[in-house]
Image (cartoon, rainbow, N blue to C red; front, side, top):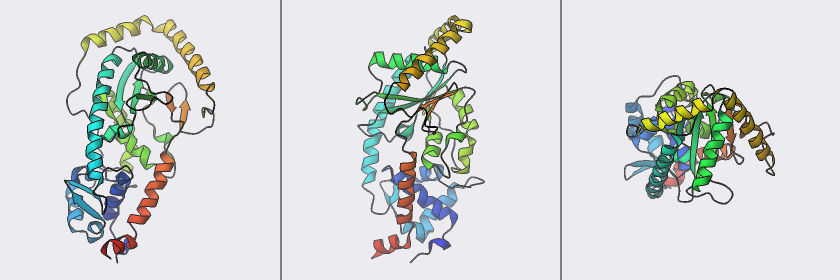
Length: 328
């Protein structure tokens, strides 16, 4: 029997990281486990060699995990390797679709960054998943930019709405260039899902703004000490013509006209949101936010649900009884 009180902080961090991703049927490589190590209260990064040594030498860890096809997972859960590989193929299709959409977004005035997020941020979309997108837009033009993005997606028939979910874009989260930090909307006392969500944004354009975003949200390193900025696998494609068109349009609708259009867009969208039965716009939560610097429409925000799943699974896997049941 192993007494969890005698295990090291690193050993428990390794197990908690694997348990968290196990909730989403996602085994990890050694490098991913090091990179996404979940260690609340961390003051400095943990070396890769220390993680590797613990995986190789710790009886506490090795009695609870297994290695299959290059991935670490909770013992008895090696079948999720196939799930991960299947989800990767789906994610690649969704990512390419998002790339194509991003080319058009280059022309939309005031859009500074577009990123894939949520499960697609770490290549884990299922066949029925939507494609979650996150946007940073120019200060003072949040409502107008959102309206233009929504209209474009609707005209192309790629926007998620109603029962049309799979393979469509979820356009539910925007911030402005003067509202990059989102630490204040994390749930307390812990919000592991939101922490990983923030760390795993994957920019399709606006890499410079993503670097600023990452710097403004350095709070995630208190939970993920080894996290590094996510960057595209290849250099983003440059569209100088699109950029010229975007800047020209911005000049045309800037100033007084821009302020009028922004105000009208805000009034129209607020009225539309309020018309939906069951709208949570006014429930004073961090699930749904609508102001001039942030728009977040997660009517069914599952952060509390995933945190409870994570905590319950930790109690099970980190318990000495788990080892006994596997060895018995």
